[in-house]
Amino acid sequence: MPETFIKATVINFLVTTDGLDEDLLTKTVGILRPEDEELRATLIEKIAKNDEILSDIESKILDQLLETQTKDDYNVLEDNKLIAMLKDSKVKSLEIKEGKAIAEHTNLKLIEERKKFISVSIRGSIL
Image: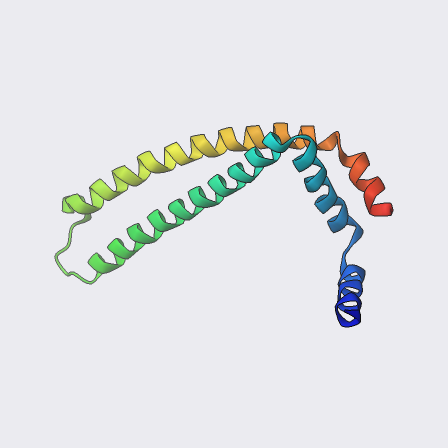
C-alpha cells in the first residue's frame, strides 16, 4: 500500500546513523555469533533484575523504618524483625554485587568481540 510505504519512508528518515550502526551491529553479531548475543541479552536482563531486587530491598527497609518511627518507646536495637531484614539484605546485596561484577566483566569481553564487527555495521549503514 502506498500509505504504508510513505510512513515507512518517513520513519527511515528519522533513524540516526549511530542508531542504524548499533542495530546492524546487533543483527550481524546475532547471525555470526548468536551465542554471544544471547549471553549479552541474558546479562542485560540479569543486571536489570538485580537492580530491581536491590531497589525492593531498600524500599522495604525504609518502609519498616518509617512504620516504626511513629512509635514513642521504640528501640531499633530491640527490633528483631528489622535486624533480620538488615542481615538478609546485606547478604543478598553482596551476592548481587558479586554477580554484577562478573556480569560486567563478561560484558566487557562481549563488547571487545562486538568491536570486530563494527566495520561491517558501518558499511551497512552507509549503504
